[in-house]
Image (tube, rainbow, N blue to C red):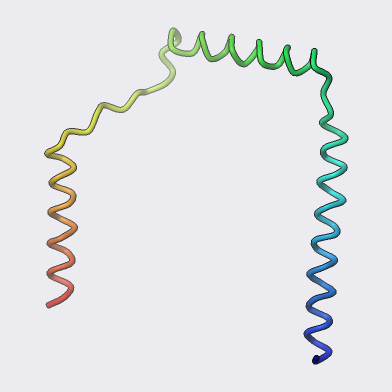
Length: 84
């Protein structure tokens, strides 16, 4: 095996080992108690239920079959023009 292959494999192993160390540290840092998790879920639920009342979110309208069909026809036209 050539020296550059060994060097490349050693570099890849170093990157993987560094990633493992970072992930373990992050898991330890984010070790929440069940009470903390429950509190965060209650906060998120309160935000989710109050969001529709504020009107901040824009809900897109449903696509009609004709708009989808038109897009498909344009796609096939482009394909047929490219093949010529």
